Length: 512
Image 1 (tube, rainbow, N blue to C red):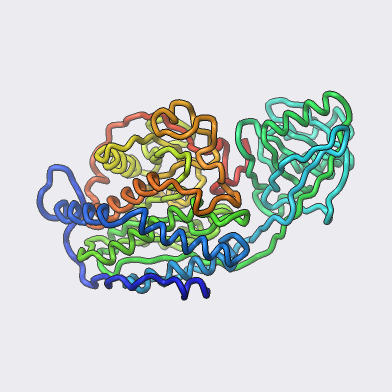
Image 2 (tube, rainbow, N blue to C red):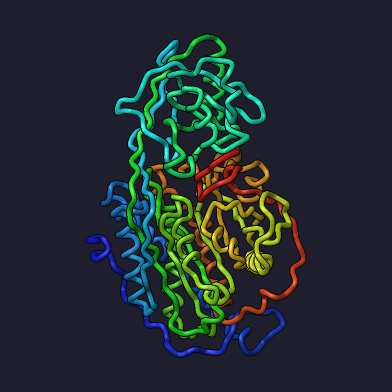
């Protein structure tokens, strides 16, 4: 809290209280709502900037530095981040509120795996969310490989070929949820489970909820898993295994701000999650989306425009725990309030250092993963793409994987979209040719790590996506007509932009 008080920005101009009947930008219209929308969107795009938003990132970094290195939901770091955002918005004249809710807080205390014999070495492992804990110091036991098939380790019969009692089960990812794998291993008498990836990249998984955990469980990369399999093929392997995790119920809160003017029946909403993981300060994930959204909100407050439509902004908490903040918000909406929400745009990780300009595939024209979003989502994608095209910026589609806070809005039929620059997914050679950067490397190599700090921001991506936010706010604050104009599907090279698999939230994989 002291950081917040000491670093408050200068007070912006107050938002007007009276509505204005202008609207956003519709091609071929030179008067009325379209004229107001064009004027405001151009003003916001000009004034909003990565340079100004970076100052908010500096505050988030300072907060994390003073609060144990992170800003996770339920921690002092997140509380201070939320207070900082709240204060800026309140000074700007917004109607601001906290939305408080309880949630299961988790924090990894230890995650260690080492081969003891025959050839000692350390193995990097990530504790699964909601894993049971080993005793302090861990345990030393034999490692046993589960035979590979299409549903490796999912059924009791998979463990019939060996004695797993008191051993650590080595299980390949795929075929069922991680919770099912560790439960089946526990049923066979295993003392712990190590699940290795079936694709490149980190394996950041969850068992779904605390009640699902049976034995201590962690995830390793495909490369590490294959090395262990090779070791076992040569003979017996003994490992030292320690996974410990704090789990307790805590309180956290979303920050919600809306304009005092504008028609409530035509509410447009934009959001970004404010919380980090406990492993680091979360400056790209998702300080970037939070700071970009805050900068645009403050620039809107400084403008002379009085939105015809109510504009609402949200900074979600507990996204990293499974979209819990946005889920709580959507669950609390009445039917009338849901109908008033005409769109939701989400901005998560918009400055990845090896990133790609992804736009959520609202019409499923790429045919990747999940189907299309609710009616109107295709138009949101089209509008973002049109803006990027006008700026000469390359872009491609990314699937609605369910990994970020658009998920709860889609579930209740609210048109959704937004942008993203990539997480732990690997950049392809084709993407490197288009966007620059390094092929074969993660879009964000510091994803969910301590190095996700101020040095982990690509200012070019940051600036482009802040312009996307600014254009959307300026347009939809005055004009929603583009949401009803037909869309001609235009497939791109669509990709999830991150790891494959089903998720309970951003970065928390539950299955294949």
